[in-house]
Amino acid sequence: MAWILALVLFVEALGVAALNWFLGIVVDRQDMSLAGLDPDAMSISSKVGGIVFGLYFALCGVVALLVALRDRAPAGLGRILLISVAVVHGLLGAFAWGLVGPGAFVSMVVVLALVVLLLMTYDRREAPAEGSPEQGAGRNEGPGPIAPPAAPNPS
Image (tube, rainbow, N blue to C red; front, side, top):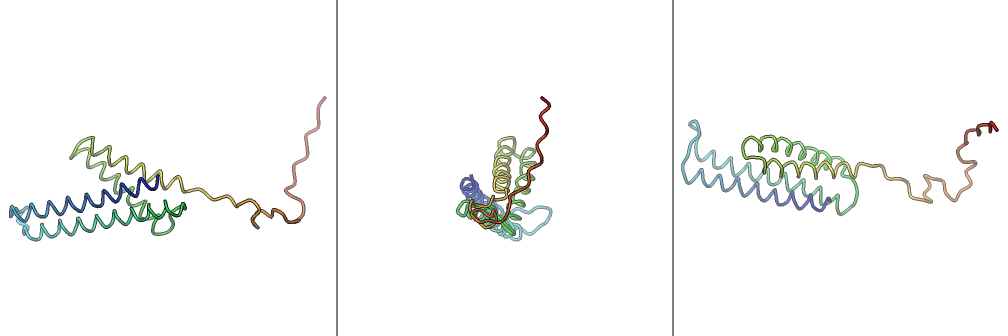
């Protein structure tokens, strides 16, 4: 499942970067202005924003890929990145419903579900392995846990 999420985030990173780059080119070629803003500034900001968000999604994809390779829960910055990308997809899904339609909403919710599923699946404590020092197996460390006294048999 982490493999699928990593692939989806890499594709999304490429798509977001390409879309914003394309929009920057369109603004530049059309020489459009929005409320008096400089078209060159709009074009450059669109391209830079696309690169930044593309790198952000790619970094989140790297975290998911590391989770898949290590088969361990993400920790520290990786966990924060995955939580933040879940929030971003929730917000994008909310905006997509109103601006684009239900198809875009469903795709955002699917990615959100994959991220949450990844975080929940690996969010368990690993049980100590049999024979590990934490269990005390194979050593005489005294009696085990004391069992409560048995209830008297009424018959």
